[in-house]
Length: 136
Image (tube, rainbow, N blue to C red; front, side, top):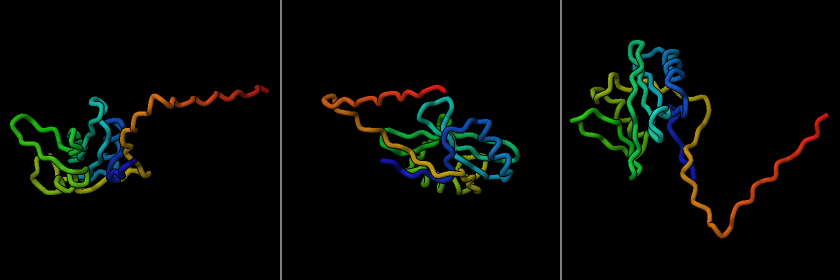
């Protein structure tokens, strides 16, 4: 089963690629979501403001809710999905360097795949035989 993701989700792009995309948009409040390069399973909410890209870590809890990693002493807010998180941070004065204003859309549709169910040990999967080609 796969779930649709926001159009601002760009997947596994690098920090440099993210900065280039947001810099090309060149609008304060432009944002996108990408996979974290350093924390497996985490994402980054990246927001452009005055030629600087601010990056906020997005974590998914065991219950499936999303939250931004906060500095010590700040209460975390949890959201059912990424769309709710984005909607919340579009409001001013929510703790970001700049509220979200301009979604930077990816070029193609993307799905997040849910973990596959484990296969039964009784029915092992057969590997496909490699195909041979003739040189010539």
